[in-house]
Length: 325
Image (cartoon, rainbow, N blue to C red; front, side):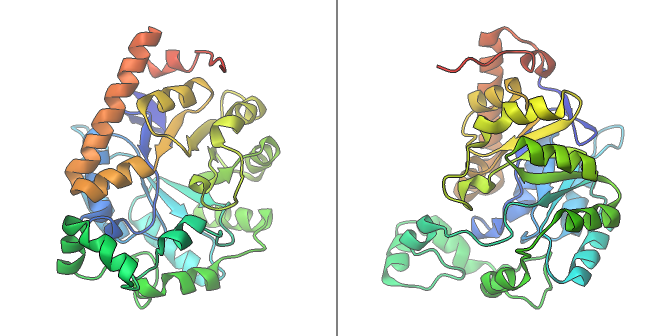
């Protein structure tokens, strides 16, 4: 059985799709497809502040797919602290009215990282239609057709007057480089529900987060896309678990590529595991069916790994010891 509890609710899988920006950039179904898969698989759904699908739409999907007892899957909203506190307060009210169960405050992206791969690949929002981008688009006709025939996407959790092409300028203007623990306390006071702190890689920060009032420690390095040479999350997981004790919920993401990786993370101290690139690849390749196939593969690999370890439940897997080779 892969059944466990995450964010205070029963789920059928110990892994879920991390909140990622702009899902409609990958496929016109965007976050809708991912939420539908999460509902089908009965696991957590996490929505990004930079989502291209509205909070209300996600709530409609999860409500419509509630189980026979009327229980919807747990919904988590990932939040950036913008300089405009009025914008943050308005957004939190929308999150509450859309019945989200928990908040995940991201604290490892108070400044845009120097994403060298994006620079090297010429990645821009919107596309700059250079010869290089045009040539790459020609080699991906299905994605290009999808992009051209559908309406331009917008970032639904930002002021609707902000077009997608203005995203970078908006983020650079609104990010809070001097983010402090007092700001975190302000968020907790505005939310007053279960809250994760996302972007922790140090035991002392994890302990202070608990003292401030966070209920979940989310070990993450922003997919390795922010600070170059930041520690791998798997390398710091055990020290954070030892620091916070066995009763604190710990989530891990970063570098998860297989069911075996999920098993390792759970055995090393995580209660839940977030995946990023794998489901985005699936989304890009086939929309809902692509994402669902990724979940099927990961679930099958995790079950296979547990069978080989001779453990029948997630609770027993978490009692395993990982030995470095």
